[in-house]
Length: 156
Image 1 (cartoon, rainbow, N blue to C red):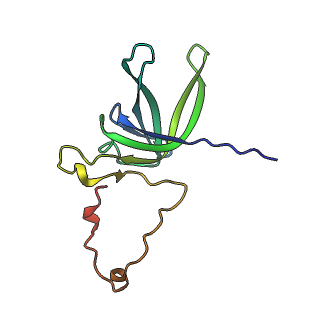
Image 2 (image 1 turned 180 degrees about the horizontal axis):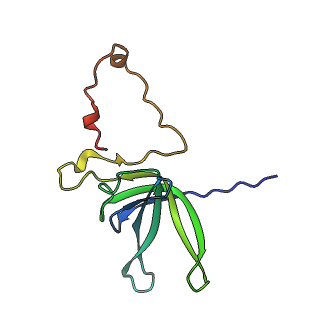
Image 3 (image 1 turned 180 degrees about the vertical axis):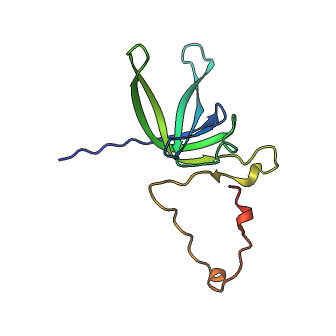
């Protein structure tokens, strides 16, 4: 009998640096960035509040033009899986790196500074695993009512 396993990561944190997009020799976009997550707790012995920050390296494949949106300090939701890579350095020593391979990335808290904080989450990337469900048609849609949304309304 085959055993089941789960490799799922969900992070909500702040971008530690601006995202960088590079392209593989075959032209596939690869965007990398880091996410800081904080943990806060009360020390049992001293009664003081303590805080700790953890950093996660994230890679997002096949998504172009994200660097303008994924800038340092923005709050972000990341969903994906852990992956560990290894390579030999110049001295022949084996090196390891664990990173999050993102399937979905969502900017949280609006665009900041543009008066749109109440705008809510802004999806930047769609999950690759399944298409987004389509909303049920309303009576207005069946009659061909124009919703007033154009391509110019989509920020990317």
